[in-house]
Length: 277
Ligand code: AMP
Image 1 (cartoon, rainbow, N blue to C red):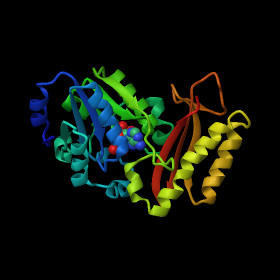
Image 2 (image 1 turned 30 degrees about the horizontal axis):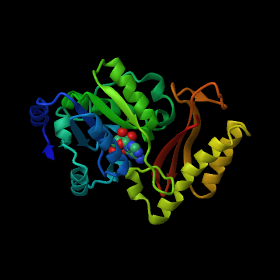
Image 3 (image 1 turned 120 degrees about the horizontal axis):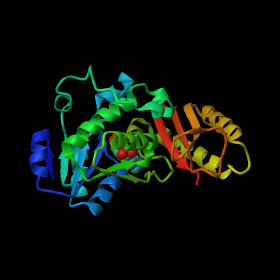
Image 4 (image 1 turned 90 degrees about the vertical axis):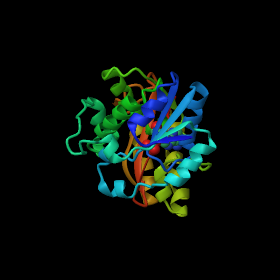
């Protein structure tokens, strides 16, 4: 595997290829990330993974400081799946002018709901770094995980509004055997936390299974209470149109629907989602 830290070296290497798949990550890699790389390897002649913990997308400095960094094992992990290229830039390489006066994107509605509402400036930071990375790598295909459902919507909108010539491939969420969505942040949970956190997925499934028997309002409040009784602090548990992310007050079976949740356990912010149809 080639490892590049500078954009010019990366671009020199990539200029020889015309079918490039790109998987941007923040490292602390797990099977979920690897599934994206494997998908890219199937569909492209060259696959590039980036690892960059992007400071401008953290609205909470504690979350940034505690973000797990495991570069050595990440490199081993990537080599084990024969990833072709790792792009591992410094903050200075991605933000040569500093991180204070960054570009502001017009994210609109998507920035007013869910993570956009609870994590001010988060999606602007995501747009800034994804745009910069896409300009650096210039891939034909970009691989994103549905685990970050709203992020997929924001990046699709970015690609459209900035006319970036890349195809977005969304990949399903990989889960632990107990149902917990794999996430780098899970590394901050205790063993007890890891087993408890599967309650999030169970609640989503219970709502899905009961959608024809009760209103969403009743199921929402019941499941927030179930989580709260086990010391989860739920930021949101909402139902949305899966195509537009319009928040729905109740089930509407004429629409594609998705449940989305953000809940804290052991002070770790966990997000998950489940499509209803
Ligand atoms: P991150 O390193 O958390 O920024 O994630 C990098 C990419 O991996 C994003 O497109 C995520 O949506 C995706 N990803 C993270 N967790 C999972 C998972 N459990 N299953 C599939 N994709 C994932």
